[in-house]
Image (cartoon, rainbow, N blue to C red; front, side):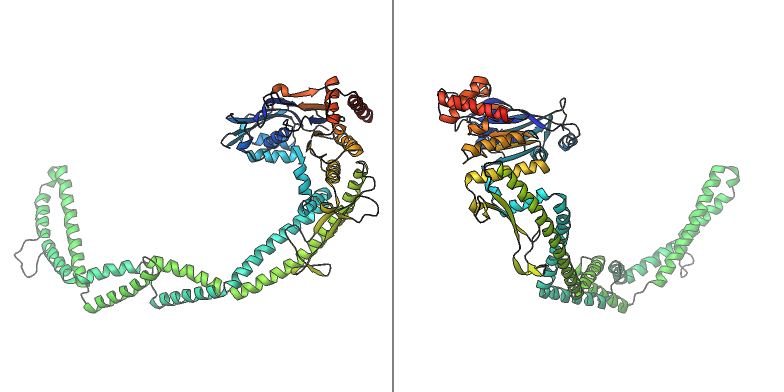
Length: 580
């Protein structure tokens, strides 16, 4: 099976590293060096490439920025390649180039396949490419939530399916509970709101406004207020157009236009242009008669009744009282009434809604209890297999009598859900508290690993867990940062052996201070400082032959030229090669 492999990293101006290239083996690479030489910067660099948090303190003093570049061989069609190509990244002959720059001011930039990308995208890819483990991860394993997550990850589909159903029901139950609490705790406020809305709606209903009524009444009030002037003007205009019956000798516009038309009619036959003008004068005469008729009708219809004007003003005052409270005009008042009626219906339906929500909540709690029971059963079955597999691995890590087990328990809670006849507390991940127990030797009672495991034992438990994961849910690359801390002697040899076996399935990079572990590596890298305290390009080198023996001798006895240490180092290398 072709897997992703981190082939090389170039590190510039990061911590004590000035400029160095780290060439990694596709199998097992051990990174060694004196304390403080910068071995951990390898882990830090990879963390940056994988979207880890940037810190300006990482930038080497005097440098403008720190840069980490990585070259990862990725198989075509892998999830990492698909996601990278979606982001516009380009592959270079099956190799994905990743870079991360951190400025001295703390700003960070990421590039993937030659394309600038969000740092979060690198973190997404990390889930498919690398598993990073260090001493901080050992402490994380002490948390019950991490132990439950580890169990769920191992159990896989058997837990994931009921957990997904449970999470969906839990989310709905929380939403129902929040709405129910909001309705019940705010009952007084909602009653007050309903009273105000009801009063407003009754006030509007008493007036019964019509859409556009305020505009119509304003126009009518203006007309009624000037009725006499309007009637007088209409009479004068009518007389000018059609004549005044009381003055038969007077000249009006209609008579003059008619005389003009008669004068032209006698000669129109002699000139088409004059005939056209004659027709237009005829049209003017018709229009004058129409307007005169409408003016006469307007004057007859004009209502100058002061009682009507008083009624209009009274109606306008009633509408103004509404617009002062509920909107700038009658249209806004009617819109307020429509919204308020809907809201009042909602508020008056609270009792019915409370009943509906209560019934739904109770049904969801029953459903959640059944799903939690199914989830707990799946975890219990997975826990037996997981514990047996980790126990078997511990036997290969110089802990032949150690036994690992899981305790899955629930906490009584009167406000919880019913599971197997008990009312227990529940959360977004179920009702179970999962705790990893260790009995390091026969006769010892199983105790939580936080209390029952030494530092070295905890390192081995974590390594055993990761080896088990490698067989069920592998990732292409594993990085261990001094996971062998607190371990020595035979246990250290066994850790080296297990890491070498893990490297047959995936790429393994280990930052270690133990020669017993380093001897099993396919490639050993030495990180060393120059006299000025920096790590330069030549400061990270691949050790082979005599150089590797010297480094293992230093790790064994602190003396590169000790004949005893050299003999022991050669023996370690020979044993590791024989084991391979």
